[in-house]
Image (cartoon, rainbow, N blue to C red; front, top):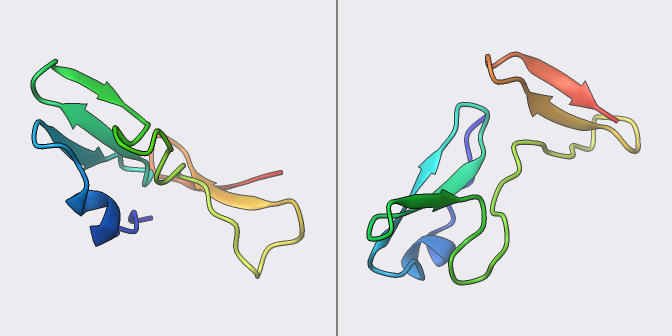
Length: 76
């Protein structure tokens, strides 16, 4: 599952920050100056992609996700 790389949140990253995407689709942020990472956007304070997604083809209350090994799974 690929993360939705929205140019809006990319363009507002502070200059010392970059981002990465885990194999399961979660976006994390890297503070190059402090040598630290976080799941939360440094400006908005919100997570961009959780690695889970709700789809219309799943029953109510279910989400699609991926294990650390990359296997597709379903979460209720």
